[in-house]
Length: 371
Image 1 (tube, rainbow, N blue to C red):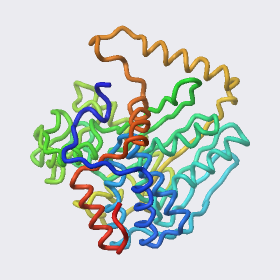
Image 2: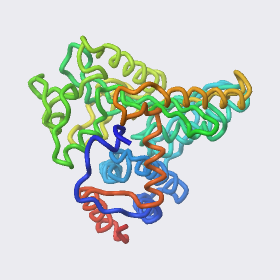
Image 3: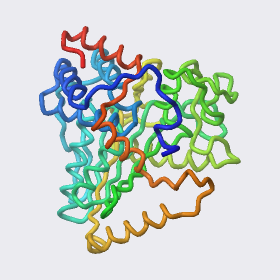
């Protein structure tokens, strides 16, 4: 299939590792950091889900970043995650500076339990860290015949419309819907013109990025994948006002307010960055990074079987849509990631040389067997 996450940049100097070997290695790294076994396995599962689904920027390529936060005292490997505010259908969770890979599933499990009892559940999370791909958390609800919702704020790298100042993150938002004979429909997207991880993938591949993704340090458009590291900014979804960047700015604002302002986490330029080339600012108004997750029972609206039958009809009709290019069908949200997972479970997960070197360096650091 053309298009999708896998088609834009061809990874160079790839080698393939089996899912189980990569999973075992990742678990061992988290355990070496001091994570309890169950947390290490859960965190590894979130990262491997990204690699399996072809979202290479958010899988084991991020592993050294979590180690860096831990070494800098910004990540608690054995947190006491607790509910600090609660109603029958809502809650706020404090992640105790733990891995977002662990705190977000805790919160989603809570949202699912509330939805099971009351029809829907909504949980905000503060004092957390980077939580991997939003789709992982939203899909946990789909497994329970529910609609899942997950979003998070992130490192301030994005300028709002009419600005060149870094004030927002890429702030992904995800909805996941169960279907019948088809895989779930998963809308998992950054609210910036491109996710920062795509710049990292392009940089590793030695490729330029498309125009409209980034401004350089002087506020000028650029195709240099390293421009943000050199003081530039990512642009909101839409790129400029004429192409709807105010809509991307608005979506990003929603994510930031629900994730940060509502939970008591940091927001805007105060969000503690995950990327190595930014440092946290002083006098932060909140605690850590924030997330927001939710679950809605399908049968709170109509019978599940009827909903799934109509979802299948919806998907089928869109797949039959008249094509602009006879070789390129309409891609259903989540379809490329589903197909990537089928392939990678069978044939292994490809790693570029830079990531492979990163993993070997971690193996040497912790005295564990490389994958």
